[in-house]
Amino acid sequence: MTTSLHESGPRTDKPTDNGARFLRAGRSELLVAALVAGIGVFLLVATVRMDVSSSVSYLGPRFFPAVVGTLLLALGVLLGVQVFLRTRPGRETAEHESGSAPEGSDWKPLGITLATLAAHVLLLKTAGWIIAGALLFWGVSYALGGRRVLRDLGISVVVSSAVQVAFSAGLGLVLPPGILVGVL
Image 1 (cartoon, one colour):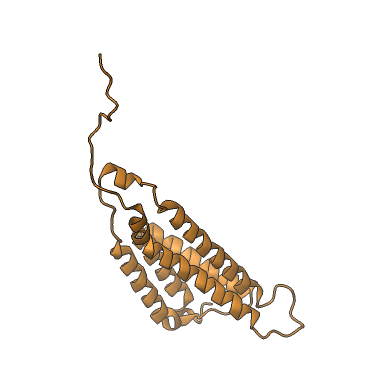
Image 2: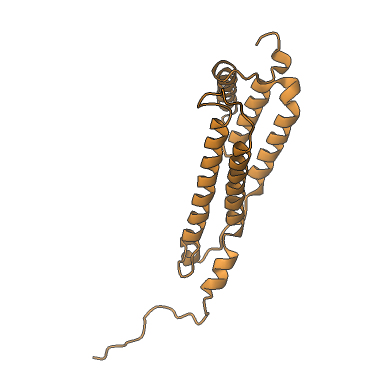
């Protein structure tokens, strides 16, 4: 009885260049991470440069932009770390191991989201925050796969109304009322 020292599985003679794959993989994800972190840095710098009178309390106009800027910066760094951990050289993903090609970008949700955002910006002054905000929230939920139109639209109206109340009652800021000017 003889014992073979060779592997019993199929043999592939293709050299794998993990370094080149690492440079190609994750470029768009790194761009998104850099963009999110850049917006966070921009917000933090703009917040520090904001002119505020000395009589403003602790939770003044710098507080919320500083919180949002810090969270965006942290999110950008975490997204970048996640991309590096997922695409580092020598690590095979499940798609590559199974032999199937990785999927490309899904442009339809991005297009729907951008169209919804454009409609929100165009309708904000004329239709008002509640209507434009509800359209924005509903459009993004539809782009992300929500297909229960009436339920999602109802939730969107409730959320945009809650934002209206939070801004007007809680912060003393008036969002555009639009066609609901007599109601609000």
